Image (cartoon, rainbow, N blue to C red; front, side, top):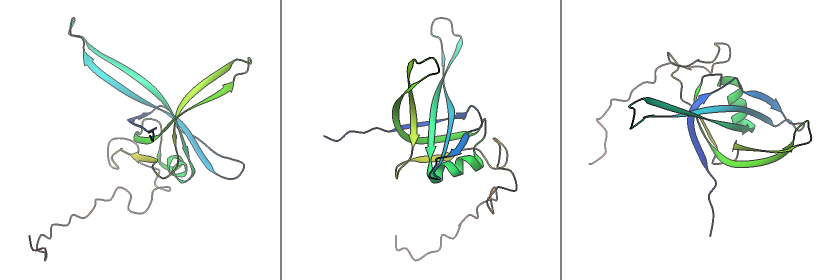
Length: 147
């Protein structure tokens, strides 16, 4: 039987992404995303909130987009695979880190900030042509569809 390893989150970026390239020139960006749960305590009626932090590593062309447009506080949707890697810290202790790795054909990064208003738009010199411009609406309902 096949298996599925997919993680999808919507949250806010905790700090500007750390962007770099591998020795072979492949772009990689890493950053943390905060997701929050809010609820009301049933016994006290007090509002509660819990924030969870997720490490995200984005590769290749999507990493280039992250480098240009994602900043601390950006609202973002990320879809990738959970991956745990083992590493040794400066004291020689083995540690493990679980990350959402965004690469491959099913990987997604969607910037959810509004271009004009909420969130931080890209700097004017790095914004693509037409960024933030309203999209034309097609209100032409007189077509040749027979139903």
